[in-house]
Image (cartoon, rainbow, N blue to C red; front, top):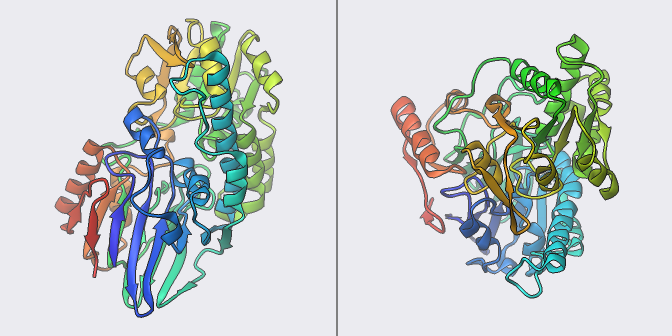
Length: 457
């Protein structure tokens, strides 16, 4: 077995891991995750560069969960020749049905906008892939139940185990004869308000482990307190609270917190709330269909779905930019890297009575990261937009486990893996995670580099 790191090294995006197995019947290639690079331009350019593997040579793709940094490259992978099965959980399949066409639509929309406004260096600007490419990729998805063992042939098996990050997210175990490797995907938190805790695993010969928060601990204050304070302060100024959210996970969590704040009287029940992300609207509805994976009752799911005015059309979205506050707008994407939220930023960031509230990790090179670092302006559609609004962060709403929670989860292993590979973290975070594991658990740990290959057995 040989493992090649095709993404999520030195960054939190672009997750792709190629597992090559020399079986008795020939070479088998399995790609675990097929994500887009996001953030810094040099990372995004990798989406356009040819992979060091031919998609036609890959037998199977396995997805840990539906987020675009783990799935968003799949339409291009299929367009370039992959035609095998794509295994995932049922909820991941349902969410991909929303996220992949939306990702394609955004890219087509941005290419069209660039061509109409003439700010692209490419003539014409082209999308990375189209909605047709996304639809073709979706036809290959095969849903698998949690803890069901899938026979991949030639002595290879696959199992998904819940990891609590978002609906459908899973630890992926691939077994070849007597040797196992587990891919953590993104690990959820033990006390998340929506998701059930990650299931503890007892064994893996090799482990590929995320490290998004490898160097940080989340604040342990109740996030509702700061959320209420930010909302009330902005409402007093008759401003707009604009919250860039990930359409799957954070959008639903924020809606539920806002619901709780209104019910308790901590914020006014009369504040209008808008969810301006068609895929977030659809993802919210999916919560009701997968009740076994989260903590909410049917009544709580209903409350979640009725907390906000659901914005579907582009015309409704544009009207919001002309609407005066106070109001709360939740809009994708969570790092302000694309989607409708960037149009809201153009409208609301220049006005000092408004607030831009971030509620999740902001990768280097994203507009979210720049604003949290105090940028006086951000570039949107080829022009610089001044940032005069308050910029706030609630860091403990992240769906990623902090390093101490990961260490606690690792404590469920009955024996150390032969090797643990730290990925999906920016360099400082990944190295800090390595150090925590070495010092506290005394495991053999490595932080691989981009395109590095390692022999497992």
